Length: 275
Image (cartoon, rainbow, N blue to C red):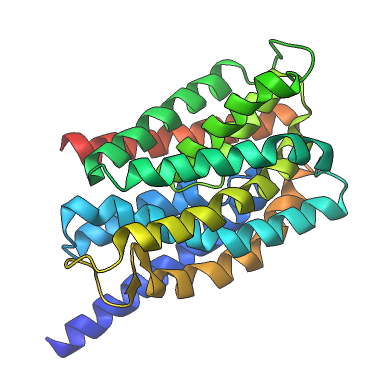
């Protein structure tokens, strides 16, 4: 039994490391902070470990948000070196993104795991269909909305991103491109949005899960420190590679890759709810 447990632990650790590598590349490539990969992988892993189903998604989301903090720093720095972070947009959206994130934290503390899973799957599907049916990134509007209209958009990005455990790129990149914002610049700016979302999000999930009787070992609220320790360093290592790739491929290819990945992820999450 001891050997089996050791082998099982090693297998899970290797899976976490692989997850971190893929998440890091995607963080730099798509500006998604890696959470779009980390959340479903952690959710599946926690189910395998027989963690209380009522908090599986909370732990996956909380841990994902924690890993996004260093990843978003690494990714945004890499994009900044290429001049792809729009700080004027950051100034307009930042406060509303944080407010939205705080609202998302409050909602997450009141709902059960299947609800968070459904939110993740539905939004991922909507974004995937948008990316795949509009692979050329045709803009609906020719310029970004004014500051007043931008505030609820930014708040929605922050709120839903916290509920999904993502860094904001999954939502902000397609939204920005609809407003004729260059996708490479959208990706770079979204990487910094990830920090504004993941930092308060992590604190909120620690608070919401503090003292829960069903938490797995080495958990700080809904943030699992084992997952954080294994995934976070690898995502930081691979994020610059993703950023490099992002600036070497076409806009259309980037959108199609993003859409396919989100579609597969959504299907996986829906299957976890229905079956």
